Image (cartoon, rainbow, N blue to C red):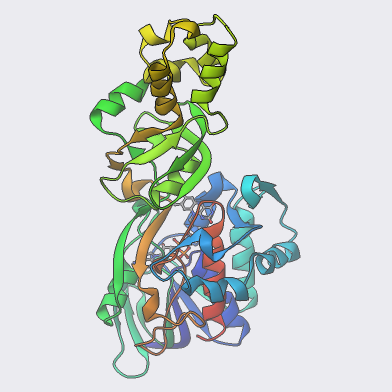
Length: 392
Ligand code: FAD
């Protein structure tokens, strides 16, 4: 049995950050991961450029059944703290819409920085290691693995969520929680494209590749951003955002022209005695293909002068308030995150330690804290990991 102070399961964003902080305190830290590479999700994130944080991080950017839980960690290790670390390594980055910060060159810059910090803190990262069992016979944890048996005083679970199983996602973190009697809230795919009902799929299949700046809402939230029609259904930032708030069977409402009150606009055109066809007017706002998929050709061919108030109302309702019931989502296969997870009420918001099992910590996406699209999930990984790293 090899003895160490801290074992962290998961060499992803949160696991590496926690290892650095615990290592800096002089703790002997071993990070175990079953994958053949550390930080695979970091490397694939943000289209290979890693949207590592956001200039504006607020607790309201996170979904959790305990919305207060994330506040402490986010205020103790902020986006500015992570930017200071990036600054030490002179990693070039840029801002995109809504304060999102991306690497200029490659997500590898972030991973290399974390691994360099791990080295400085004498952290050992052991890959290709399958965890067979976790026990706590007394006040130490005993782990049986494919690379031998280990014992530690503090065990940190940083196994992430269930999204992209191909990249090594597993439910191990939830299983460890279950084993120690810690509540796990139901999980689901978040930041994920929608699939459509068969009839809608057929109707909109010709629109694949079209992106429209829109406002998307359900009963709980609304987001603005592009909606992208795909050959499977709907994607794009606004769709991914609302998907984390969506429940099966629910309708969503999409305003394909959020800047234009179409009812008022078409009536005004009619008043101005303009003779253009309805089609020509609408093509000034939206792609031709989209208009044809949404509206009847006979109606589109009418001169605006011949379009009734009722018809204008129908057109406006189709484009300003398109309601659609998705068939489902693409699921964990393409989801960026997992909604739900370890019940935050079972964990200290200051230390990330289990309230029931001393020495057992949960950090990152395995917890029931899910960020919006835009760097919020990595910031949660950094913040929660930093906190645990001060105590484990
Ligand atoms: P992870 O980074 O997923 O790390 C978990 C680690 O645990 C992995 O290394 C895994 O191999 C290991 N592990 C799992 N099961 C086991 C097991 N049984 N035994 C041993 N090891 C195990 N967020 C952003 O903020 N910005 C982005 O740009 C962004 N882009 C993304 C793009 C994609 C395609 C995806 C899928 C996600 C993206 N995310 C992004 C989300 C972000 O990657 C995660 O929220 C973040 O990585 C969570 O960190 P974590 O440490 O909790 O988990």
